[in-house]
Image 1 (cartoon, rainbow, N blue to C red):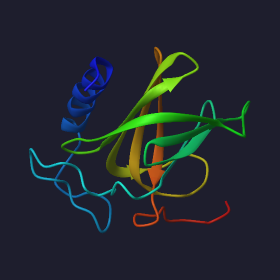
Image 2: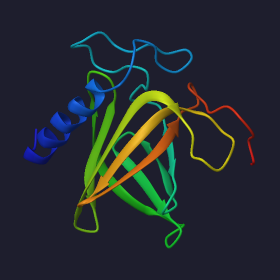
Image 3: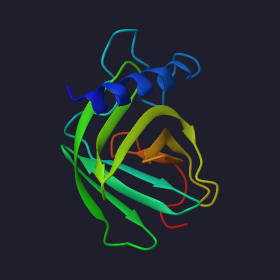
Amino acid sequence: MTFRLAIAASSFLALAACQPGPEGPEGTTRESPGAAFAAIGPEETVRFVGTEPFWGGEASGERLLYTTVENQEGFEIAVERFAGNNGLGYSGTLEGEAFDMAITPGECSDGMSDRTFPFTVTLKIGAEQRGGCAWTDRAPFTGPENP
């Protein structure tokens, strides 16, 4: 395990420890201490979105596509996937900066679309931290398809 992945994993586990209660998104449950997070399987595609600034993308396997308003085609980066105690982490490098994303169970709103998402996202690129929401086909958002 690389040093950066170990740091990201320890930060991720600390973040996951702050999550409330044993219930996760509908159809999922929080894992017992010590168990690897299984609410998002390694074969699933995770989609994510955030605001201010607007960003989004998807992760599948060891590839992640990160989009912004300035680059709607997106940046495709290689990532390492880490299933922690209460969430999922992705670590890679984006334009020379560390890219670390933690996805944890919890009701989430992007504040703009009237959608409710089953996962929260904490994204750190270099020194900048952002928050957002995520979903999968197995754990979809609720609300309008095209807000």
